[in-house]
Length: 78
Image 1: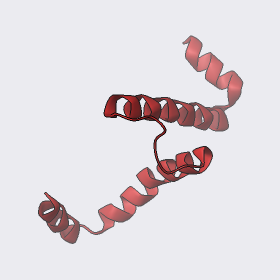
Image 2: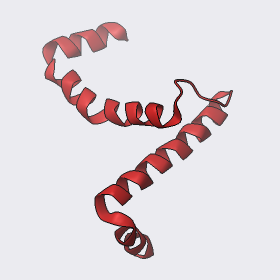
Image 3: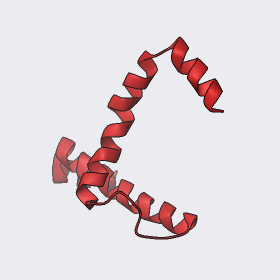
């Protein structure tokens, strides 16, 4: 599996830079907000739930910073 990824990455090295800019930033922001590097919950289902809640908070905070609270409320009302 890692060998296939290395071959794909060697063919298109710019993909890793794109991933770093698009994907890694939210994870770094979430780790900074929570002041931790590990999940508080144990077991996979619990960790998934913890991450889902954290991702929801990240997305809400992001939406508020982009469109503001009134815009978020208007979007939620449909």
